[in-house]
Length: 504
Picture 1: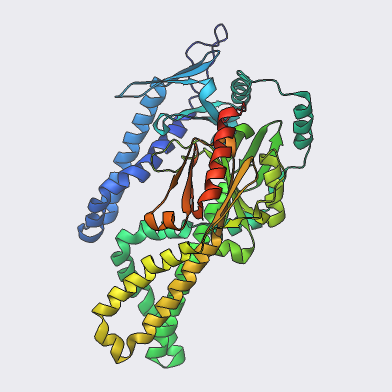
Picture 2 (picture 1 turned 180 degrees about the vertical axis):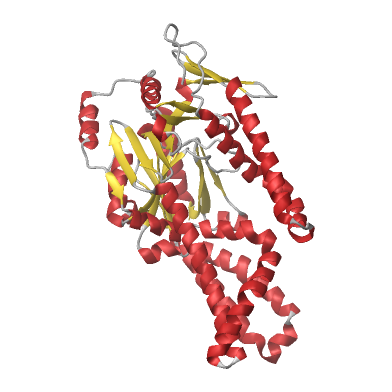
C-alpha cells in the first residue's frame, strides 16, 4: 500500500500484490454469475464438440489473459482516501465509480488474510454498512497495522463513553476465556449444513452426462468384477449399484465437511470491550468484528442432523439490506457448532443478560393451528386425490391413503408443537421448527414494526397472528390469544418509543 506521508487524506494506491486479489475476485464473479449464462453453450460443447481438450485449453487461455489485463487496469484505476469521517473510493475501468461511506454507517470492519497476502503482511479490509449490498467497500492489499488503526478510528468515531459500572462489566467479560472450536467439531457442521445439496443442485444440469459416464466407465467394469466373484449377474448388479450409491453419498459428505473446514478452520471467538471478534478460515484467515449493540437478533438452530449430534448453530444477525430477506456475506456472525453449554457461554458473550435460550418457558400456540394445517395441506388434497383415484383405492391401494393421512397428522402436530412465544417485559423469544427447532431472541426496543392479522375464523376464536419486523428480518408467530397479543403490542410499542438505547 502506498500512503501519503504529508497528507493522510490524499488519494492512495493499493499494494501491487492486490492484482492477485482482483484476478481471483473476477474469476469468482465469472463462476458465480457468468457460468449460468454460458451453461447452454457448455452443454453443447460437452455433447457435440470434438477435440474438447484443445478448445478447452484455448478458451481458458483467452479468458485468463482477459481477466489478468482487466485486473491490472482495475488496479491502476483504484484509488481511495480516508478522511476524518468517511472512506472515499474511485474505481472502475469502463464504468467509473465513486463510492463514499460515512463512518457512522459502518457496521463492521472485517479483516481477512488470504494465503497469498500472508508473506507480505497484507490483508483485505471489508467495510459492512447499513446501505445497499451492491456498494460493498473492500480495500484489498493494505498493511495489517494500517487496517487495524483504521478499524479503531472507525469504531471510536462518535463513540459515547460508557458508565463506570458498565465499563467494569465489560472488562469482566473481556477477561473471560475465549471460545475455541476443535476442528473435529467444525467438521460436524459439514454434516449439519446443506452444502451437499448445493453441490447436487450445481450438478443437476449435467445429470445425463454423469449417469452415462457412471454406467459406461464405472458401473459396467465394477459389475463384471463382482460377477466373477459371485457367479451371479443379478447379485453383482445389486452390489455394484449399492457401492456406487454409497460412494456418491460419501463424496458429497466429504465435500461438505471440507467446505466447513475451509470456512471455519481453527475457529476462535472472543470479546474485546463491547465487540465480538471471530477468527477462522483455512486458506484465508478471516477476522470479523461485531459491535454488540449492532446485533439485531440472535438465532439458535438445530436441524435433524444436529439433533442427532446434539449440537446447535448460533447466528448473530445485523441489519438486513437485501430485498430477499437474506443477509449478505459479512452481516451475520455464525458460530457453526455448539453444545448446549457452549450455547449459554456464547449467549453470555453476545448478550447483556444471562439467558438459557433453550430452556425458556415458551407459551404454546392454540391447537387450532394444527387443525388448520392438517385440513388445508393434507386432508383437503388427499380428499381430492381419493376422488380422482377412487378405483385404485378400492382395488387395494387404500392403505397408502391411511399412511399419508397419519404422516400428515404427525408432521402437522410436530409443526404445531414447535411454535412457542415468550415475552419477559424486555426481550422477545420465539421458537419454531418441524423435526428440528429454531430459537430467536431480540430486544423489544429494536422492533421496527409490529402488526397483527386475523382471518374470520381466527376472529371468532379470539386468536391473532403476531408479526415483528426487525432490521434483520421478519418473525411471525401464529394463533396466539388476542388478549395476550394486544398486551404484548402495547408494551413493545411503549418500549420502542421511550427507550434511549441505540438500536444499531
